[in-house]
Image (cartoon, rainbow, N blue to C red; front, side, top):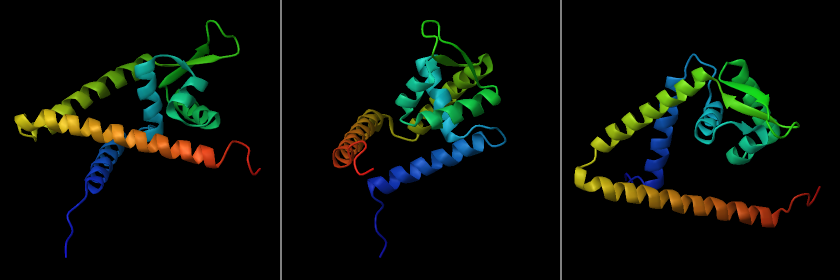
Amino acid sequence: MTREPTVLDRLLEISELFQRDLAREFAGTSLTTARTRVLWDLAHAGPSTQQALANRLEVSARNITGLVDALEEGGYVERAPHPTDRRATLVALTPSADELMREMQRDHEELSATLLAAVAPADREPLLRGIDAVAERLRELVAASGAARAAAHPTGAGR
């Protein structure tokens, strides 16, 4: 008896396909999914402190330091003194990384158009509304789960 794939099965398959495509795209470079997330964030938010990056990406300060160190070593980002806070350092894309991210944005737009072309024109708008609704519901579920965990395990409890 073969069961019909669930919506989650299909979404997981799509996620896996995107991960494989990303791995193929960055094979032979020092870029990983986590490092690419940092670059993507900087491309959209602009130069940021490491603390702001860590907060937006929901990773530890230690983790963001390692990511930024590796990206700086690879020539993707540069650190500079913060103009108004002498204790802080700003992380910014290098010109070549900025161009890479612009190219990646163009690639995303082209792939989006290619993927949507597989859907009948009359079905495209409902599909996009459905994707938005599923993404919003998943955000709500993740936030609720995080809040429940935080309530069950307050900072410092049991240590």
